Amino acid sequence: MPKPLDGIKVIEFGNFIAGPFCGMLLADMGAEVIKIEPISGDMSRAIPPLKDGVSSAFMALNRNKKSVVLDLKSQQGKSIAEKLIKETHALIENNRPGVMERLGLGIDDVKKINNKIVYTSVSGFGQTGPLRNRAGVNLIIEALSGTLSVMGEEGEIPPRPGLQTADILGAMFATYATLSGLIGQLKNGEGKYSDVALMEASIASAVWETTEYLSTGVIPKQLGHSHRASAPYQLFKTIDKKFIAIGAPNDAHFKKLMDVLDCSSFSVDIRFKTYASRKENEEYLVPLVAEKISNWNSIKLEEILTENGIPCGCVRNYAEALNDKHSSERGVVIEKEDPELGKIKMIRNPVRMDNDGPTINSLAPALGQHTFDILKNIGINEKEYHRLISEGVTL
Image (cartoon, rainbow, N blue to C red; front, side, top):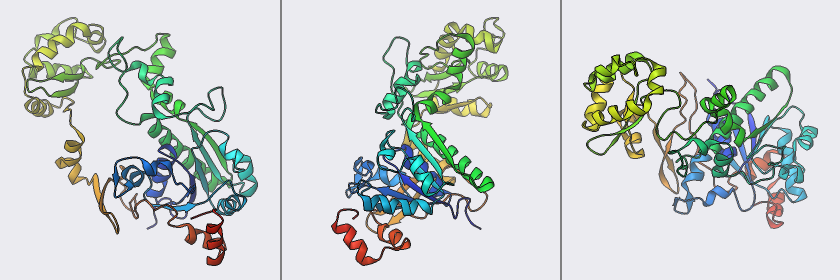
């Protein structure tokens, strides 16, 4: 059985995370993703950690792809790109607005070559608007989108998320846009252009916060470890100096939690009887609960709470998260053999299908690894290929 995207050809003009992550997700599902790189390569090839000079981050973001090196500023490089575009179903790019137009590969240019193409542009702030030309790196997007404004304790410097939230959210929406466009292409024979902004992806993901502001006019504030609508729903410190996440989002959970902590009287306390009243009186409730939890061992408490169906979990590091029995049984970490680098560990695609789902068939390509094979398919012979190399058009 073919994979969902078998037969779909995608060209990726991607750097760093957002564009490459989108391309990777499509490649995992079977699309042939041709990554067009400059002579110097995708800048993420230099991001540490490096293993034998190869970036582990690049390896993680560019599996299942083919690498073609082209100097798009040269007429010959651009001409080759146009020939590839003519035969492709989708194009992904995450350059600054205006870059593709200056190269003669903007949406209007590409439509003249292939008017059925699905063209997805990912950028920090979108293709229009006053901020379009600002550098849109992850932390700056988190700052300007409002994400950081609700993090940390009130009045304190907001901690930055430990993950690349804006880049990954933008990549997910870009994948969604590309897949939607491909469905429309197959159904109606029409192309589609999508303008995906990392800032808007971040804003769209802030469901609780934007809803609070738009419905009440109240600006969401920093809440520390508290939840915006529920209490108790946060991290607590245990006697063994570990942290445990506990959520009691409904009355039944709250009653069970109070029973386990030997403070059943809180369940009938007028201040804590309902979902709304618990949130209103959080400043009284949380310290009482925290004091009880501070006398518990984290693992023991997690076991008992889990037995009682109360949402909870000890804070784990990545070694613990990736090596526990559950992750091992589900094969979260997989190993692939590289002829030069040996065994490479990576995270599998999180989607599991009943059959023919996403797989990792090949590791990230070396710079320009597939250039000749791809160019041969559009009529460039070995002699001409070597001429292109001598002229600096490719490697």
